[in-house]
Length: 306
Length: 300
Image 1 (tube, rainbow over the protein chains, first blue to last red):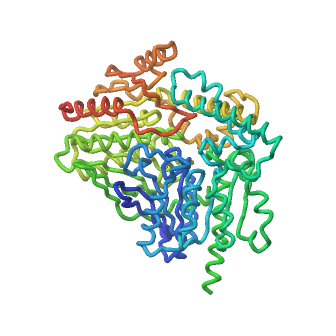
Image 2 (cartoon, chains in turn green, brown):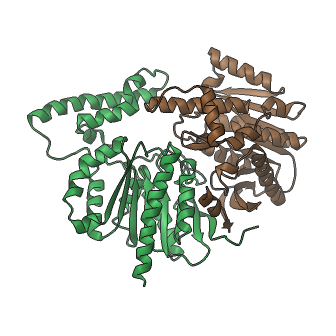
Image 3 (cartoon, rainbow over the protein chains, first blue to last red):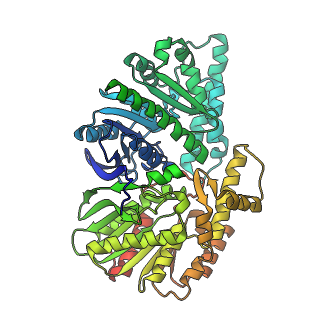
């Protein structure tokens, strides 16, 4: 029995994506919506489309209650979708899955889109920002800026790399004789660390001009958004390495934008570590940021339509 | 919370279907008491040889076991067993909020999900599979439905111990982050009572659940129960070191006689790594046992 106050409708669906069937949950207003679709993507650790502690479920329902058509998607090999280990990494983004989700909404007559993702999902959204014609806004939560190519990473400033190393604990990993994969990863990190140390010494003699350890597409895509007048919301936690790296790379660029361009970018920095959604209060804070950003977009959209 | 309650009044529509060889998967949202329950039914296209209900774990552990359960369900459906998976209300894609989760509501959800499957494929021999906390729910379902079989993946033996384990994980994370001192268990439990919930690594553990689960240890639930039982212990928990040996001994002491298997595969809980698809050994061992228990046939 559904109460009279029902304003949302949820529909499960499978989406054709080549050889795989991707699972999605579409949350929509029962009345006519605002015509804008939102695609929610999770991080890359095989997290299903609910996201940790249903962050995406709550977001979808809150956004649909004001008129958005929200699709949360299981990547292939994750959640209810078909497929095995997908081997996703920052060098192998889930753009085919995102394309399938975009097509799914377009087939339902929804071509104006907001792409929102966290970590790996953020980079996937960004990878399609330039080619999505109906892009109305982009939301990137704890988006990494690094390139995963070790040769590029070896040019990262030592301070930033040390932060990363603290998280991975490579010295401890080196002693995990029972886990060859952990040992191999630790060796790789320490190898890079040695290279970094040398780079640091070298940079005292001749400073590096450009941060080669960053992902070029990330920098270019973010920098291009104000020119396209696409609103961008960036959310980071102040204690996560991604934020330090983002500011190192993009801080000056954002400062250099003129007032007109800056109105298209909102940087929201929350206390703590947003990245893994490992605290309930931070989850709520992120949800509130996203909802208020998209409420504003919704209002602007209504005003534009008179 | 008020806002959540409002948003939980959600209509559901449609069913998503995918075919997998000689089976099909139907995902739908069931309506129960004004809320929705997410269900995924994996059914054989040919003759159905029995039904299995999978009761998932709770909190972050539900992410770790998700694909193992999906893959096991696919595998069994292709061998003639109809499998129902579901999300408890207040979790996953289902409606409801965490504050409304109780042990009894979880059992109601499980039985409603089973009923929905049986409406489609007919009632036959029934089995339940529960992982971690889901083992308690599965055991209660098995107790209520005579003649059923039961599979337990790394079962929680006592709900109070699970709560203490969860609190230790919470304290460890906080200390690791340098966000506070090591608080005594009594202080954390008092906070759970006063505030009504604790943040366990990004999940709300509410006192409605912990209170309602009191007195529902596996031993209490399965006293006098005589069905077929398979228990699977993972990784170091079933290893040859003292902790593993003690854990296995404890499980054996808490449960009625049945089959017990230890596998090298780790089932990381609390500070989990990524979810994996589940080893062939885990899926093969479990599916063969279920086929034998539900249909009297072994898998060839």
